[in-house]
Structures are given as C-alpha cells and as structure tokens.
Image (tube, rainbow, N blue to C red; front, side):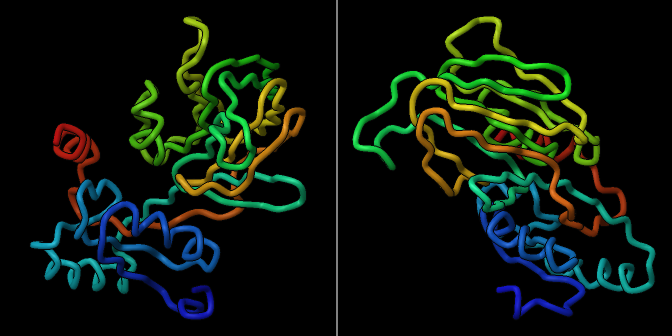
Amino acid sequence: SPSEIRGVDVVIILGGDGAILHSAVTAAQNHVKIIGINYGNLGFLTEYEKNERERIKDLLKQLERGECRILKRSLLQVDIGGKSFYALNEIALQRDVGLYSKTSTQILRLKVETKEGHDNISGDGILISTPTGSTAYSLSAGGAILTPEVPVFMMTPICAFSMRSRPIVFSDTEEFAIKITRGKAIVSADGLAVAGLPEDAVIFVKKAPFTADFPVRENSDFFAKVRNKLNE
C-alpha cells in the first residue's frame, strides 16, 4: 500500500510480470524504484531470475553509489468521468461481452481524435500501449516491439473489422480522446477492468506525470530478453 512504501528507496518484488504490474503504479507515484526477481512464468520486467537472487546485492551497492543506470518506464493515464487510472502496459477499450451491461456488443465502433487528426475503428476495440506494454497484449494483437525508453505510445486495433487498420505509433506528448460511436465498452488498465461505458461516452488517454523507475544491472541486454522470453 502507499503508506507502507512511502519513504522507501527501493522495493524488491518476488514474482513475475503480474506482480510488478500490481505494484508499479503505487511505486511510481511514490518515487520508489523497482527491482524484480522472477518467481513467475515470463518475467519480462524482472531484472533477475530466482537462481540469480544473490546478485541483487551488487546492484543495490551500485545504486547506493549512484553508479547504476535507471530505466524510466512511461505510464499511461486514462481519465473517465472525473476519475483517473494508470497503467504501465496499456489502456484497453474493448467491446462489452455482458460484464457491465445485460447485452453483448458484437462490434464496437470508436472515433479516435488526436492532434494528428481522427480515425474511426470498428472491431473488438483498441489498445493504447507504452513501450513497456509493446511486448504484452499489444504484441499478441499484432503490434510492434518498442525499446523501453523510446518516447512514444502505440495504438493497436483489436481484431479490427477493416484490413487497413494497423498499429500506429504516436509521440508520447499525444493526447487521445476516444468516443464510443456504437456499442458498449469496458475500459481496462493493465488487464484490470476499471469502468463500463455506454454508447457516446468519451475517455481521454495521455502520458502519466510520473515514471516507473527500474535499476538496471551492467550488460543488460533488451534483445536477449526478447529472444529468450518471447520464444518460450
């Protein structure tokens, strides 16, 4: 909880990516650095495997001396009806299959407005993902892999009803206004449903005002993680 980690410099998370996602927003809001040790399955966000846990002592010493690189991962903020929610991986807007409404929406139609213009998307919904989230749900939906610190967001359609719909990369200064023009939708932040929305509702997505900071050990290799983790 926020009260438990307030004033702490580093939190060490034993688990997989799910455990890190569960803790990342609270840690980021309180400027607490995150080090993960993989006790889960994928562990793409973790810095060590469980058989390497003794090596964390060296990383903590480097961090204390100021000799450790800090990977600053962007988060997303979604504003819905006066409330804000945050995500390290992605914000998803998907058709409601009956979770919030009594009837299921078969095709969700959305209008996405940005500083670059607007687009209309029909299908199961869309994802707005961070570079961190590019190796999560967005990748399964056909999105590209982004390196962690590139200052962009990616919009990925989910099962789009048009062959022209492809992932689009935007500057992370972009702000998205997404309106439901047909159907009912569920909004999720890192896989957790946070709201059900009726037709004509609008949500706003932008960069969060804080980052999730991950100390990185020497010789950290992003491409090795891609090869080893995503080929399992």
